[in-house]
Image (tube, rainbow, N blue to C red; front, side, top):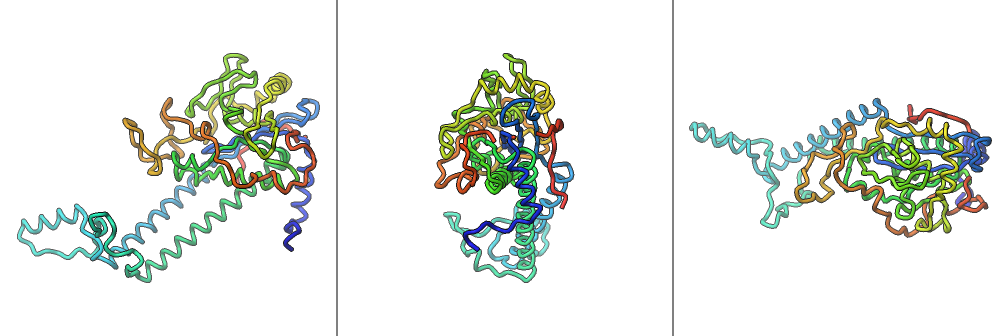
Length: 393
């Protein structure tokens, strides 16, 4: 039971067998608001297949459902705070509005009124430590019920995100094969800038699920260092195209390529080779092969790389409480998925900051049954449009 593989349904085994037979080389580009995948035939010959591109982004229905869930969560948390204050009025002081109301009644000669639910700060000493620990507060039955409902909703949302990531990973591996390459970004640095906006799209969860599905199918998900490849700042012709994070369109003055920057990065990731599959710093971009691919797959690339910003393709800009504010930098209310950030401001932490050294091999390298060279590109149905995968369950 422990040493053998887990159970897989006949349909899953059939799908993975078909994906293992695809001789394709693909690249994955993870972003704050979407995940882009582009793959080519392993031989990079148009006679063996066409370019295939996929974009994973939240639909309008999913965004509306997330907004509704967040409103419900805020309401439950507000109810918890109000219940705690009502059960422990001696541990909180009155708010400024309540103090002003008391002053007005006193000036008018009216008797003082007891505040049932104080809205001020918690009673604390000079060091800011609460005089009474929160664990010693009296909690009502309604408080415990709402707390259980909040925990149940959080567990349900986490399970739904895992299910969505698995379905997306299955569709991507079935369409692009089990040999993929992704930039080795530390997603923890993204949270310092975008915070809870990542909880909606969960790019790290999706990429991890894709790597696990590649491993179960018998392939690899290799991780390439952003310092040695610089996929977001490079073109197929080898020219350097400098872009800020707000620039979502890749425009090369050398060869004239115009396309979505995420799709361009994913297409370039398919041409990355690693001398050591377990060391992301050994990754190098094969610019000669990329240039040949650009010439051979000219028409397919024009369809796969749209020249207009896609829905959900622009990462939100803004600062969260977890990020330090620079002097003179305007402090916003935080990131929103449906807001357009100002151009030309800030750094690009998701592309310029490498991941920390891992204590174990990355997902998709250990335990693989594929005996081919790990850097060998792995075989296409032509699908011109950009597909947004979603889970309707």
